[in-house]
Image (cartoon, helix red, strand yellow):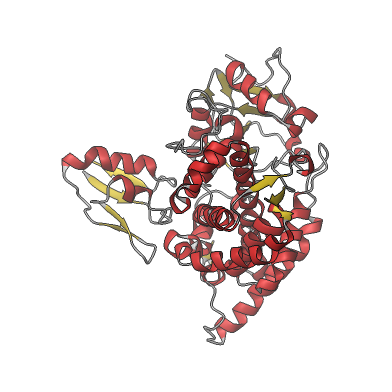
Length: 63
Length: 415
């Protein structure tokens, strides 16, 4: 699984970080950092939850 | 399958007297019997169930913003399209981001949004508290004041002045300008915009001053919202002062008109339920945010936002054709019994996993973090300062509106 961010849409709201903090981190500089671009399979459901939680739909998952 | 011309045995018009005053019962009936209600006179459908409202908000592929923007002026609804709506023109002057679609929508939001992001907002907390405490220092000794205008409104306008680089002394005038723009005379043409022009001009002048300073290398007057937009490129060019002023105007009005109404409403609902107020008071620093979130679900004032179908869509038994509009009835969705248990009950610690008060998708409220923090600070500071209070309901005022139905006068008395 590969995580892709639409950087033109992402506004650093941080909803993804609540769902999957191992993968997404919005830091004090208000930017999103993807900690694992290819997270392990056991995180799939949480990464999917992060994609759904994003109010701007800036996250897509490629298999 | 309903078509937009289908006759129905139930009358609903978003601009009727009843809908402008208190549409709660109408919304309940719509959810139950006509989740997609045909409004042929506006070439539109009214959507009232949570799932539909949420899905359309999220669906930038099949639904678009028209040039007339998300908050409909009925005078504009005579425009009809038999196919996808024309894209808003990007000829100068580019209008507010709130009326645009990607990619320009996102470019403008990226440009203006720096000071609205969570970390930047969190760093404003002390300033917000200072503003709120200063207002309370002045107001509480009077024993009675207006929660909307004197307290929340002044603080909200002060916060927005800071974000867009206006002098804090302008806050009362900004509030007045925003309130004047909200005074609508339905059902005719709603807001001519005339009363608001001075605010647009004031903001455009602030942009011109900052542009001049920035070009001269003066970082003392740096402002993240303005600077971000000065550096934004749209269609291969930079934005004019007027275009940037229009973007700032949107966040100033959005940030000033809603939060104080929600904060006042929260204090009203808690006052009506002393046992809930006591629970909130047990830990103000945690519980105010929770109570505020329920207030947004229960009584956020914005009535509807609109979108236009780009393709044919089937939804809740309706056949929505390309070029037809949908009214997303926000308070109807937020009281949908399919999404919320006992939706008409105010339960301060309900903690809904989602609601539509900030929208969802491309036009998700850009001021969400400011709203949440400022609302929490307004509640916390007031409840900290005032051990016991009464709301003068008889003297409270919630004028009919096709836009925002919320209290614009709510006297509070110290006990």
